Image 1 (cartoon, rainbow, N blue to C red):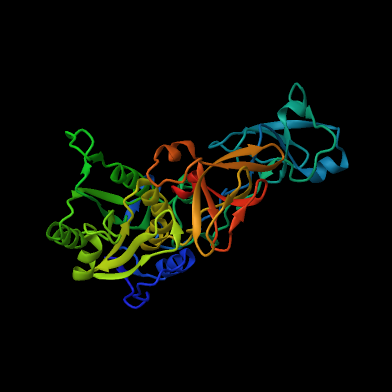
Image 2 (cartoon, rainbow, N blue to C red):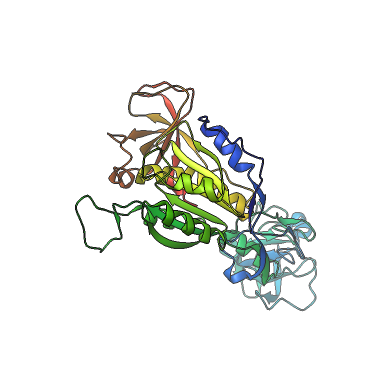
Amino acid sequence: MSRLVNDCFANSEDMISAQEALKRINNAVDQSVGTEKCALANSANRVLAETIYASRNVPPADNSAVDGFAFAYSDYEKEPQKFRKVVGRSAAGAPYQGQVSKEDTVKILTGAIMPKALDSVAMIEDVLVEDNEIQLPLGLKPGANCRKAGEDITQGNLLLEKGTFLRPQEVGYLASVGLSEVLVYRPVTIALFSTGDELLNPGSPEFEGSIFDSNRMILAAILRSFGCLVTDLGILKDQLEIVRPALLKASETHDLVITSGGVSMGDEDHVKNALLEIGELNFWRIAIKPGRPLALGKIGDAAFVGLPGNPIAAMVCCLKFVRPLVAALSGITQTAALSFQAHAAFSIRKKHGRTEWLRGHYTAAPQSIGNVEKFLTDGSGVLSSMIWANGLIELGDDVIEVNQGDLVTFLPFSELMR
């Protein structure tokens, strides 16, 4: 099981900054999840648990990058426009097996191994062909259109480091050296709850004051995009005697337990109290908007995160705080989501000492920095704002005012949700 370091947090009721919360989360993981062998064909979106060195050169031999005629540059340099004899043909998987002199040429197809003594290739459309002889064009350079052995990968060199998230390109990279299976970290297992007497599963009969639970749908989709195995354990009623055993049982079989709702200071917010009884609460108040009540702790060997109940706050906090925690539990070494600067198409004032994330819609500008608009309202329950937005505008603790045209930091959802 993954573990959190016992003394890595200050167990305090004091509000902490977003930066301090992220620092504590990044330092929290003492042990990643276990490892397992995985067929390379099934390894996409897994995390490499071993450092891999190249067992061979790629390409394994000099080969042609185009369809054309292979020739020796040293002879071409002496007499570039003389007619040369074509003595054979080399195709991918069927290399030319005969002898060839530096004065002769071999017709060669893309990917075919270069015949010995020949080191350059003229493209077929640039060559004059007459019977069984050819005339090469002027201006060719040594090694033209020839891919050298080991040009992509050199035998013995570092291929991929432990902790690399395997995208399709990394899978193909490993396949190119002949690997059929790799050692990867086991996916992080997550138990997911919503809490609240007012919540209903979509499709259930409504009652006065009820709302349909969207948080679990949102969070499960985000967490699965991180490569996690999510167990949806439904809705917990606002009763301590229900919340406490449910969290305890989930912690026994999962690496991480996540709830939404129940971590504020209301009479019916029982998640925090349950955690104090069966586990450890490390922090729960962060100077952020949206999402100030966000709890991180542990129950037994499982990590615990209590997200806010409002859908926008739950989603933003999952992207900003759960994402790095999951990355650390997964063994991933590269965790930072890419961001970039954009011109603000709005003006706003905010509280000093608090990090805020606004829902933003970025529009690219040709040959210049793009512009980003903010959603008209900041309510944490306005889920339609996330449909309109294509990312988050991040305003740091020290920002108190943004004026139209100022540069702001923009985090696209495409980066935050992977």
